[in-house]
Every structure is written in C-alpha cells, then in structure tokens.
Image 1 (tube, one colour):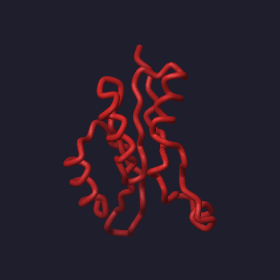
Image 2 (cartoon, one colour):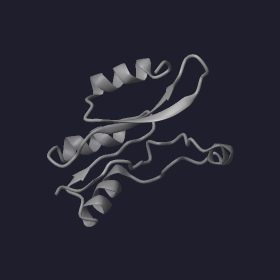
Image 3 (cartoon, helix red, strand yellow):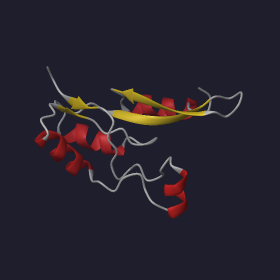
Image 4 (cartoon, one colour):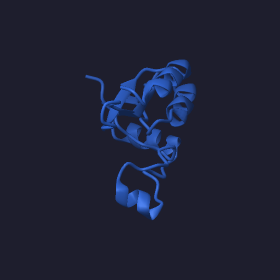
Length: 109
C-alpha cells in the first residue's frame, strides 16, 4: 500500500494559525520544500505533498521537480459568512488555476 503524509508545512506557511506564534512573529514552518521531500522519502513515503496555509508555492515547486511522486495540496483557511467562524480545509490535487478559484471563494465557505 502506498504511503503519504498528507499534512506537511514548508517555509511558505509563514503566517501561523496559533495566536501565541503570531504574537512572537514566528512562522508556522521554516523548512525548505526540498527538505520536506527528502525527509518524507527517507521515512518511506511513496508520495509527498505540502499543504501550506493558503499557499501552493511549495507544492507546485515539488510537483515540477518530482511529478510522479508529488500530490499538490493546500490548507485553506475558510470562513462561515454568518458568524465568521474559521475552519481549515485540506484540498488536494489542485493546479494553480483551481487554487486561485479556491482563494477567491475561501472567505465564504
């Protein structure tokens, strides 16, 4: 059975969701996409994805270099319009055009 870790952040998750990290001015992750890929491979993952917060640069970077072993993804912060309640939605197998559509609609789940 193929193995994959489907929720990993890279340096492109630069705005953390945790309030205390925001207060410190810290990023969610400082890891380079290539490092994410290398570690995943050493851990026996057949497929690698990066699901940065509202950003697909890391996933698209890896997809370009390792197209047969990378699944694109994003952790999209979405909001319910009636009360502003926030949720994180993991979305996979997007291209850049689909990602732009998600970005345009994420303020109103």
